[in-house]
Image (cartoon, rainbow, N blue to C red; front, side, top):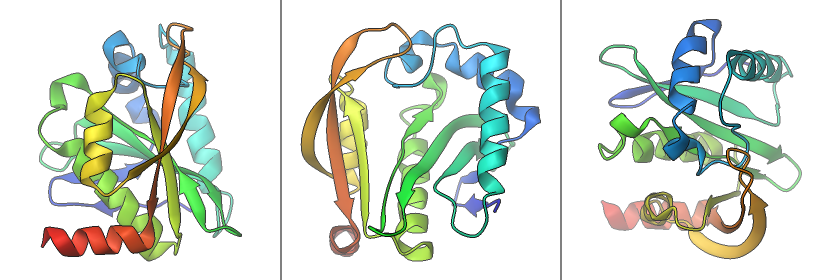
Length: 189
């Protein structure tokens, strides 16, 4: 089931073949890829094609898929600036996970926070999930700052491997409960 979400400045939409070139260009930035577990470096056109194909297959899995993968584009000009995932959805436990990336030249403008906030609202309000589990690699302070701003709390840490350079690192596991998110949002108003 293809889903599109609009925010004030962004459109979160399904990935498409037209995204191939921009996806490869964006994820070939090692300074971006080093913070993501499953992005190889270099990132090849075949990697992008496989990703877009997989995302298309996910959307055809019926009314209760286990993942939603969104391209993030600017509303103003349609430029692809990143991706956001809501994945590992377990309908029995009402949990999900996911991540986000924003091209380096579009970081620092609040786009990541805006896209992640939209994903959270979709997960809790539209899908009825109760808990989101995310994480960030040790040293990725910007990711932690964004998650903390949205109400996430640290829940633990696990050993992880970065595919871009093969290094072993620590992934700080974070969580957000729907009740905490509603409370956190209420305090921000």
